Image (cartoon, rainbow, N blue to C red):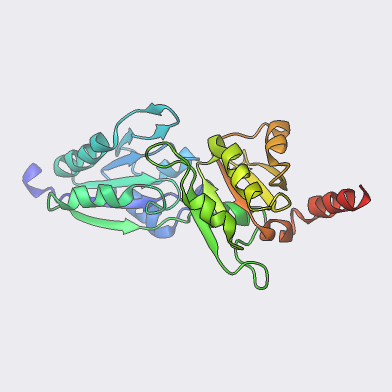
Length: 258
């Protein structure tokens, strides 16, 4: 039987959290999987698209708790493809946006295994959109930065300091533990009044939001008890959101009356 097995690895982006934001192509790939290796997904319902008899292996990383190292995950992908055939590697968001997907594909290809990539809807754009924030808007923001808050050596990306100098919208993933440093960099550029939104568990039923300015956001995070996983959005587009407008109108009127 094993002679007829044709190994294949398909990298699938699970989207930002809402299970309905998985793509049709992603759902079809899952339906044909013999094995699914999956991360700490915002919603495990996505796994229901895989056949009941498919092997499911959790290989996710949570802060400070790695079930497998990246090298072990790479090896598991290859071993399962060679043993069982069709492997789906399911990753939250888009697998090529801070997802180390390219490393996994390159490793599989080094064994001559056929690979495919099915993009996912990235939380970089989808999570702000869920709160009515358009990360680009004519006359307000003509570009955006998407930055990882924590690099592989656990530091804040040096790009945050560069982004703080620009007029672009800045979207920071995995940055909650570095929020004081991020605030400091924007304050250094005299941007204390810049609107900020922090969206935890975006696009899911557990979504929580805190909005303020660079100067006030740390206090807002405490008040709202916000934590990871969350996305930090800094830029004038935040106050353009139809959902958040009321807050900023109220905030500005308080500032004026001071």
